[in-house]
Image 1 (tube, rainbow, N blue to C red):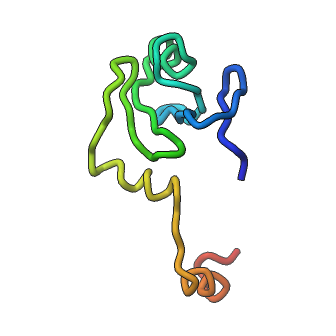
Image 2 (spheres, rainbow, N blue to C red; image 1 turned 180 degrees about the horizontal axis):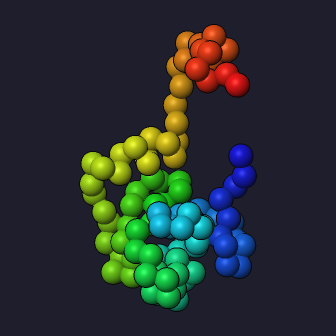
Length: 96
């Protein structure tokens, strides 16, 4: 797994957001940040904070709370029981 880093100018940090439209990573939410400018320039308004799993609408900068996004939050930070991991080798549907 790679550390999330911003597309422009490739900075790592705690405030990296993924655009839910194109999947690119951008830093910050404030005005003049790469995420904000991406929202304005490209018309992509929904972002997820990669560490916190919270969803935000830019450039208006409000938090989105919607149960339809829970699957994305779960996929962002998956958890597995030890039994789930052991069963991976036995599951022929997952094997190639």
